[in-house]
Image 1 (cartoon, one colour):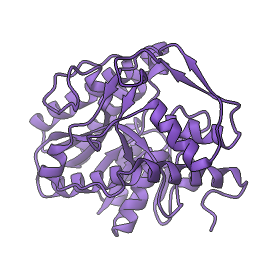
Image 2 (spheres, one colour):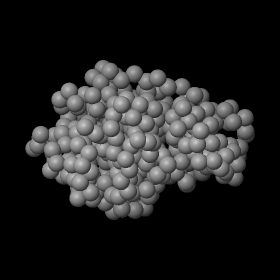
Image 3 (cartoon, rainbow, N blue to C red):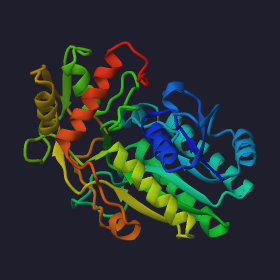
Image 4 (cartoon, rainbow, N blue to C red):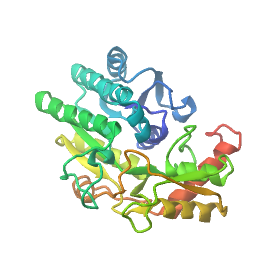
Length: 332
């Protein structure tokens, strides 16, 4: 049996492929390479260049490789972009996810793990926020992910099909062995942007909003190491293979850091005091959002191993230096 990873050539997906291969799983990847890279798909995983919303392609891959589980990462993820292009986000994140779910049902794939987001909560009244909170997305990005969660729940009621939606908080860091990291040009992840600025790839960086109701006025987020997130998917996969019921789990550390705290961590790691411009708020950004993570710890037995901001930043910076070296990123 094999695991199909959609978006497996991207940042989180490539780490998922590594985690699956390290565990001895057979892995196939579908990625259109719009933001991913062929080199990021570790051997011996098999890459099919195509769209995760192409039902014919998905069905052919599932049947050829005996896929018993799908882990779905493919999608668009930039909140401000979703505000500017809502229909594009509903197409890529919702319509294509519907096609993928249909292909899974039609080919008898019973286990499905979905890359969801804390953006479904919007600006929560209480932090940490738990899975029982009412969803209130503030952006088309969050809404597009919530719609897919609803489709998965409905499909699991109608078919022999089980799904876990993992609501990610802010994913950061790089593979501790240096095999993969955030490599997307013009990425908007805070730690990525700060590391690029520290290394001179950017003349400076912006902080969007300094008047939020937080200790220092900047947004507060829960940063989860990408390897711990991949391990959460492994826990979800084991749960589903043991006939676990369709469910939703937060993925975070229950600890928040402000934008300015993260920037100071990058300055410490790089020993560079790079310029930071204070700018107005962006649309769709909640003031603070921190994960209530008790459920995934108790139900799936997941335990974080990399929940240290300085370690996360140091590994992200090391990966950024690797990208700057001019060598193939996966070179020895």
